Structure formats: structure tokens, C-alpha cells
Amino acid sequence: MPVSLTVAAWPGLSPRLLRDGSENYHDYVAAGGYRDLTDPEQLLDEVERSGLCGRGGAAFPMAVKLRSVRAGGRDRGGAVVVANGEEGEPASIKDRWLLRNRPHLVLDGLRLAATIVGAQRTYVYVSDPAAAASVEAAVAQRNPRSTVEVVTVAPGYVAGEETAAVRAINGGPAKPTDKPPRPFEQGVGALPTLVSNVETLANLPYIHTHGGQEFRAVGTTSSPGSFLATITGAGRSPALYELPHGVRFADVLEFHGVPAEMATGALMGGYFAGLLGPGVLDATLDHDALRQLGSGLGCGAISILNGDCPVAVAASVLAYFDRENAGQCGSCFNGTAAMAAAAAGLRDGVATGDDIARLRRWSRDLRGRGACATLDGAANIAASLLGQFPAEVARHLENDCPACRSGDFITLRPYEVEAVMTA
Figure (spheres, rainbow, N blue to C red):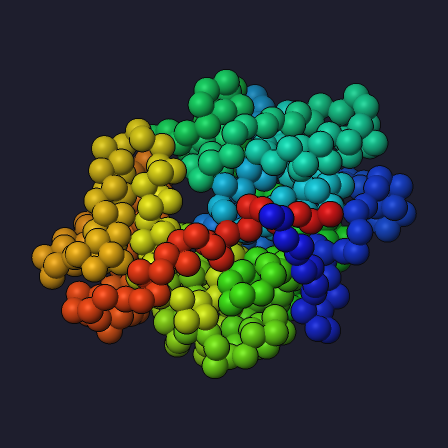
């Protein structure tokens, strides 16, 4: 049964991405949208000054990507820009929300990026039917003769990887390809291609209007600006918050209505950045702070553990990776299956010390062995379970776990938001 989604900005923060209700073309223009861009070079400098990094998971500097694609496009006679809104991450709702509710903001950012790199072809890449319909309607509102093409694919975890997006737009399956070449070198139609998350693009109109320095007025020095966070778990309805980088996780819990003492850890960065124990309560939500904890912000999706057994969480997520891997790389196909089986054995009370030793070795040795980051995500889950929750792992080797035996967590999957309705 679909559930509602709470949408709110952090207290005192003037939202840059969220708004009440859906936007239309005339309201967006009246609010200053689709401003003329007469000096793309100046805007590129402002993007660099802003420190904007990708919001899709990798946090790569946006200005570096723009400059690389622009330079390659000049050498190759053209470039392409893809707004990546596939959002195969089941723990995240932000991209679908933006495309459903703020399509003109995303299209404006797509327009600005295309102008900077000199692209004549632009795409919006999605798997959510409601998002696709919203974008198509917005494109028609703005310019019925627009060259923006909406490409839809079947949803899947690997479908949102940048080379999978390029491959699908080129007519192939939405599965990752070997690298190099990377899309900025050779992408859609063999042209240099900027594949950018829709939230990243949605920040460009603000920078165009207010400048890079104003963009840095919130956030931290190394993680400037605000970001969209999908918060799930703890028995509460999912929420989408616009937060300043650097806010304390404990304060976010309070804002979300969850007493800090109820949180026993968190699943960070969607499924990719692994598990953190109770120490996450003292962490700030920015790239540097979480990196020091061996984790990351990723796509901004955070699932609160509220007495949930971390072994059950890890086993469930690893089973997902086993189902969702592309089946192209032997190391990933076999590695995710092996780690999922080991975690399931631990959950079910049949694992041995040798099984845990193998799981630890796989979590270390399999990193970087796949064509995309799926295997790395699985390794992060396994390694963080063993590193952050050693006592729970030891208990599962010695005794039966009532929480795991009940199967309630596996049935509920409280960290997923695929069923959320935003209307």
C-alpha cells in the first residue's frame, strides 16, 4: 500500500530545490527561471567557484565534468548532455520528486549545462512513468519544438550507472560497459557526453542567478550548498528534506521526530555506503566527515536503524545486490551471490567462523573488480557489518536471533521508498 511522503526544508534554510506544489512553466518564468545565458564561460567559472559536486553518489566536481565535456566536444565536433533521473536506488526518492514536481528547474539546469558544453542534443533519462510524463509535459509547455528527448527504461539498480544510461540511449540494454572510454570521452552517438544527476543540474539555475559565492552561503567549506535527503526507517513515514551540508545527524533525527536514543545506527548513502553504528549520531552530514568514518553521503538516502538487527539489514541488502547485478562480470555475479549467501547464513543461524572469515576476505578483495560500482556497494555492506557491529555478528554465531527468526524486517523492508506516492 503506497504511503505518503513528508517534504520539508531544514528550519531557517531558504529552499533552493523544494517547493510547495508542482510548478508550471509560467510560474517558473515569473520567478526568474530560464534566464538568458549570454556568457557560458562566466557561468562555468561560477560553477567552479560554487564547489558544486555531483548529487548522484560520487560527489565529483561538476565544473571538472563540464570542462572535460566542453573540451572534448570542441575537438570532436559536438557534445551531448544527459539528465540522469533513473534513480535505481530503492532507498531514494529525490530525483523522482524533482522530475515529478520541479521539471522546469531540472530542464533549466539541463539547458544551462548544454549551453556551457556546446551540446545540441539533450536527454532526460528516467524509469519512473510519472516522472517521464511530467518532463514531457514541461518540455511541451516551454517549447513544442524542443530537442529535449525523454528516454525511458525499465527500472533497475544498475540502469542508473552512467555508462548504462549511455548504452540505453544508444539503443542497447541499460547495463554498464567497461571503462575506458568513459562518457565524457565517448558517449551518446560516440560524442563526449555529460551524464549528470538531475539534482546536480537543478542547482545550476540558482548559481546562474545568485553566483557561486552565494551558493556557498550554506554548507561547509568542502561540501557547500544544500542537498536532498531521503530519510526512511524507525517506523515513520519516509521524508524528503532539503538540508544544509554539515548538519548533525542527531539534529536531523530530532527534526524527523525520532529521539536520538532510539537510533542504533544507519544505512548510509542508499545501499552503497554501508552501515554505521551508534557513532553516526555524532557525525555531521558532509562528505569529509562521513568519509572519515569509512562511509559516505552518496545519493543522500539515509535509513535509520531503530533496534533493527544489522545482520538482517545487511543480508537483505546483499540479497538485493545479488538479484540486481547486471550478470555481466563474473566477479560481481559470483561475488554478490557469495556474500549474500554468507550473510543469509549468519542471519539464519547456520554460519560458521570460516564463513565470516570468507565474507571478510571477499569484502576486501572484490573491490574494484566489476565494470560498475555494484560489487563495491556489496563489499561496503559486508565490510561495514563486520566492522561496525562485531558484537552482533559474534552473537549470531553463538545464538539464535529472535528478530531475524521472525522475518518481520525482511517482509517490511523499511528502508525502501519505491511504493511512495508524492502526489
